[in-house]
Every structure is written in C-alpha cells, then in structure tokens.
Image (cartoon, rainbow, N blue to C red; front, side, top):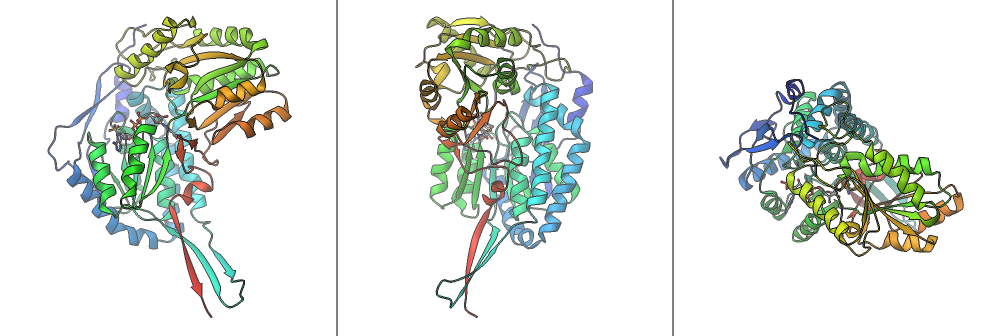
Length: 492
Ligand code: NAP
C-alpha cells in the first residue's frame, strides 16, 4: 500500500493556527530563540507547521501570568466562567470539520474517528459548563451542639496540564474544562508530536473571551526540564497528566517536594474477555472498536483477547475476516478505516513485537508486517499462540495488533486478565448477567465494559487503578480533582 500525500484542501484546516506560546493572553515567540519544532503528518511525513520551543524562562513567565490571574478567575461568578465554556462548546461544534481535519492530519486517525474525538472533546466543555455551577458545600452541626461546620469547595490553584499525542483535542478539553469550571487557571503542555489541535483550541478560548492568564500554552522539546521547574516553583498546586506510566512516575516524584496534588491517567494493558455464551458477532463488533479505534494507539485499546476454548476458533475466524477487510490509508481519506502509526519509531516497535512473537511460535492469521511508505503504516494483524510471558502480552502494544489467548475456566480468565501491573479498563462479553456482574467485580480495573467495546463518556468517571493512574476525569468526580475543601469552624 502506498499512502497519497496530504491534499491542499486538508491543509486549509491548519491555516491560521497560532504556532507561538500563549502567555498572559498574548501569542509570543519563545524567549529561548531555539529553532522551531517541525510538526509532521504521519501519513506522508510532510511538515504541517513549525511550532515554538519554550524553555524554562517561558514556562516561568506563563506561571507568573497564571498565578496573577488566579484570584480574579476564582472570584469570577461560576455562571460567567461556565458560559465561556459553553461558548467554546458551541464554537467547537460549529468548527467540527476543521478540528477533525487538524486531528487527522497531525495524528493520523481516520476522519470519522477524528470527528468522534471532536464530539467527545466538546462534550467535556458542555458537561463542566453544567457541573461548574452546581458545586456544593455543606453546613453541619457539630455533635456537641455548640459549633457549626461549614465546608466549601474552592479552586485548588494554578494547574499544570500535560497531554499525550493520541487524542490531541479530547485529552486537553478533558482537563481544561473541569479546571476552568472549578476556578483554576492552567498551563497546558500538549504533546510535541500533535500540538496543533490544542493550539487551535487555545485560540478558540481566547476568542470566546477567556481572560488573559487563565490559560497558557507551552510547546517545548524540553518537557522534563519545564515541568520540573514549574513543579519546583511552588505556585503550581496541581499537575494533571495523561501519558505513559513511566513519565507519570517521574511527575509523581517531582510533585513530592512542594506537595503538589497529582492526577494521573497512565498506560493500560486491557484484557478483552469472550465467554462461551457470548454473542460472537457482537463480540467481534466490540473487538474492532476496542482494538482498531485510533489504530490501537489508545490507553483503552484491547491488548489481549482472552477467549473461551469452545468459541476461540470461531472468534478468531470472524475477527480475522473483519480485520483483513479494513481499509488502510491516510486518515484524511474519507475511505480510510485505519491510519498510520504516529511515527517510524512506533511502527518499528510494533513490527518488532509481532516479529518476536512469530519467532516464538505464534501463528499470524492476518497481517503482521509494516506497509511501504510514505507514512508509518502497519498491517492490521491477528495472531494466536503467543508466549504468555512475552512482551506482546505484557507491554502496551499501541498498534493495530490483536493477540488471541484461549482459556478454560472463568477463574483462569480472571487470573490471566489481572496478571498485569496495569488496571485501566477490561472488556467482557457474556449473555449471562450473573457472570457479567461476578466478572466485573473480580476484574482489577478502574473501568469495566460489559458487552461494549468503548467506555469513554464525558459523564462517567474515567480512570485507572494499580499503575494505570490516580484520580478520575469526567463525570461528577472529574471536577473534584481541581477543588480543595475549606472547613470553617463557626461559633455563633
Ligand atoms: P508520554 O511519552 O508519557 O508523553 C505524554 C506527555 O508528557 C507529552 O506531552 C510529553 O511531551 C510529556 N512528557 C514527556 N516526558 C516528560 C517529562 N519527563 N516530564 C513531563 N512531561 C513529559 O506518552 P505519549 O507517548 O504521548 O502517550 C502515550 C501514553 O499515554 C500511553 O502509555 C497511553 O496509554 C497513555 N494514555 C493514557 C490515557 C489515559 O487516560 N489513561 C489516555 C491517553 C493516553 P513530549 O510530547 O514533548 O514528549
């Protein structure tokens, strides 16, 4: 397969996206004077934009602006703050096609999935525009009858928000919306590989009237140095990170010195269980979503298909047929169902995992190899008979590769499913309600999907346990991560 190059119609979507840093309400060049960073289209390697490379001085300037804006933003009536989020929601919906094209160009996902990301990302703005005006305090009477206890939520303070490349818009709105609704100012550090949707969204927030300093945005080749400087300063009171477990661990450690609150949405190794009583057609539909959405580059991607012995052959046959029929191509081609991986390193890593599994005796039913360029495409792949202790089952694959593992009993399925340091999401297909509930209880995961291949929902508390994270995003709970409680002891 060869990918066509970016067409000029798609490129119109990136015209006018600011390529500088947003500090104190102004778009400014990096003080460092360092060369700009090229942002590439992973479908053809073409340069889409050249963005600023912030250094520590820029980061501290953004923090000065965020700290200066904090008191005024916290004192702004919640209704006013939330109306701005609502306006941003309306604008994002109106510009759905433009944002979808930007996401598809910089990240590679098919347009239909990029549109779904815009919808999902916009939903956080609407949801927190609604939640932000319903924050509740409490008035209690002390058991001794003598005093009153007032409990009030208040914004935690300036936040550092760090996002990954795989959902360039939705991971940003999932943090910005609750932070701003709660009355916090924030600095966003988007992924260097895919900063354009975040930059365009930051511009949209400026245009709808979010005051200067309330949101800053920093692009940089020095994420570690910048975040260390910001966390060591003491004025950042919260870091909310979505990305790899490895970087999450470092940020948790760096947050210790100034006792900065952390929310961590980290990696996953999701098991997808198919029991013998499952509706196999539905399970295959769900498997396609859980595995192939985002080319498998999702923390929630099904990483291991655990299938009951009596239905394993049929499941493998049905899944292989559907995966073999997927159309691979540039995300911006309307017909594409699977786009490129994010870069050459990712494609080569996935190729290495598959080749090693095949060398160790796995049977490749479909796919199994990289596709010729331009772009970083990998064949959608199904394989079986994988070494249970090998890296294909132990690591996050982050690619369009579906390994099938057979199990005998429910107990064995649960044991295999939980045999990982991660605990983000697990999927299970069964028609037996009693089994569904028993399995949901036993799975070690922050989220369990029963007879569904997708859990993402702005109204639900998204997050992991074990080494998949701390805290929740979305739902009622998502805004609590940006609030402190103040207790006032009151004698009348
Ligand atoms: P990553 O390498 O951890 O990077 C994530 C973000 O952290 C990027 O903005 C990156 O900046 C920045 N970063 C890198 N090193 C840093 C450091 N030392 N200090 C502070 N920030 C640093 O992850 P990724 O490759 O972008 O994303 C894939 C990972 O994210 C996967 O593990 C996936 O499971 C996880 N993820 C989790 C969720 C969830 O909700 N649980 C959702 C999506 C993705 P640069 O871009 O400049 O390197």
